[in-house]
Length: 203
Image 1 (spheres, rainbow, N blue to C red):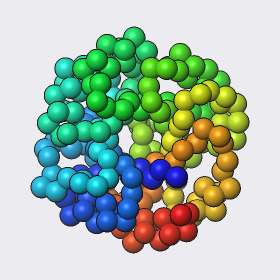
Image 2 (image 1 turned 45 degrees about the horizontal axis):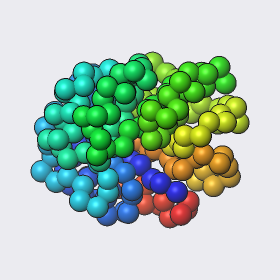
Image 3 (image 1 turned 90 degrees about the vertical axis):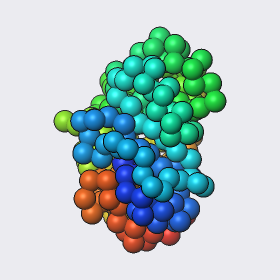
């Protein structure tokens, strides 16, 4: 199972979370987020893969940030169209692309099929007032209606009490989980002990 911890910003916190053995670490490059990364932290992941999160950003800015931060993944969390992603791909050919979708009902999955073949992975998050980091879950049974070929990460309000639910959740295309606000002491600052205890339960 792939473990992604998103919304990282503090250098020492990054170092401690990486030491837990997580696979992906997410950094938010959207200025309206309370977890916005305005400058490169003094410590940046060396083992975990680096994911840059963007919301309706222009292609050149994404390319520049990806180069400056030596990103491994680009996560698109806005209303980016398949056509826009196709234009982006040649500039980021060495990167993997994750496309996030806000989900509340089975009808919200209808938009997903248009992105098949354009990205490497989907991320299914909770539809809410903010672009991610809402701290609440959608009904995971909705994903019984997802029959696509693209693998996905499960996101949206996963918290310390959800270890058994994660272990019981089975979907052939689910390859991992995305953790964020429910493991925070404050926006951008993760509770390392809570993460450690949770990961020990699910791994």
